[in-house]
Image (cartoon, rainbow, N blue to C red; front, side):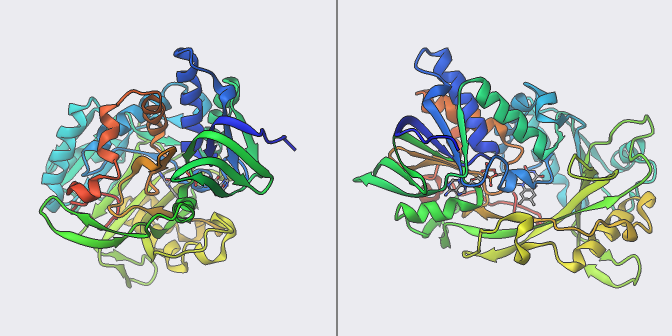
Length: 443
Ligand SMILES: Cc1cc2nc3c(=O)[nH]c(=O)nc-3n(C[C@H](O)[C@H](O)[C@H](O)COP(=O)(O)OP(=O)(O)OC[C@H]3O[C@@H](n4cnc5c(N)ncnc54)[C@H](O)[C@@H]3O)c2cc1C
């Protein structure tokens, strides 16, 4: 067992993508500025690296959001993914999103904003969209499709690979990652944390950083922060909301014994189809499963035992309370529902003829998991207390490796512009996000 130090400068809680990314980048910043090194940082995880959402994510890295500040954040994130794509298991295959006519204006806006921050994408409308899709997937059923966007630098990554890669970067820079240590409380002087209390003793520290994923609400409560708040929207409307809302993600895997490739034999982009006016019909029974189609899928990563695809659909809202432990696949209450297998396979068959009749290939195993969302479903990167910095990604941040990089710069005294839109103060200041034309909570 690793001996806990009695004191250290920086304690990072949580060894998921954010805890590890910020630890690695902070170590590099301390070294580069001659202000210390990774030896001044410890990362604590009650279980171990990747024990939270980071270890069970589908792994999609995309930038299809109506919330424009996310576009720059994702630009930084792809820079980090591409810093060492082999170590992080990053496949830069691109990402294609597909919609109906009611979304054309949104796609145009997103395309413009993405390109303005050098996150390059191509936009296809009408017949051009249908032709584009057929070049990548000749069997794409393009009826009803009116618009498509192709993000060229997006892709996906294997969850185990990125956790291993990030943990290695941390240890290369002297950061200590200590598993099996649970933070149980904080000793405070006023609002400032002087000691982190753990199940194995206490640690005096200057700065605490949260990379706590679904456990963030619990620690928010430990600091006596309010679990509800008034959020003000740009139109002046004020809504009283829960600070944290849990959602349950629905994902699954489908075996496919032929190579899932483009006509050129390439690994295809991550595909995401939202047809808001097209129902999903059970391929076997003809019964309508949902009055709209929302599906994403891509080639499977290292978590699959045989070739196949991983995909998912819109998460389900649980509310302000949820049991976080046991987490992920170990929690009986939060597995993908029975209907989901029919839904995923039918939606895949509805988008490409190669997947017709694929239902028997659905992999019956535990899948999915929960996450804690912020009041507007957009990340909050800000102080939770005078010396407690919070990375709360609203459970769509596997892709957001750049958050740790920007936060490390901020903690060194810089003021990165691209971090500012994610401050907690936006809720009181009328800058709450939320404009969307989608069934998905991620906007
Ligand atoms: C099923 C699923 C699929 C997803 N798919 C995608 C996707 O395709 N693309 C995408 O961008 N995002 C996806 N997400 C979201 C993404 O996985 C998360 O937003 C991201 O991984 C959160 O990372 P994190 O580092 O903040 O937290 P986590 O990875 O959850 O890590 C938190 C860590 O904190 C530790 N911890 C908790 N409490 C304590 C304590 N008291 N003391 C010490 N340690 C503690 C835990 O053990 C855990 O390891 C998905 C999420 C789920 C659940």
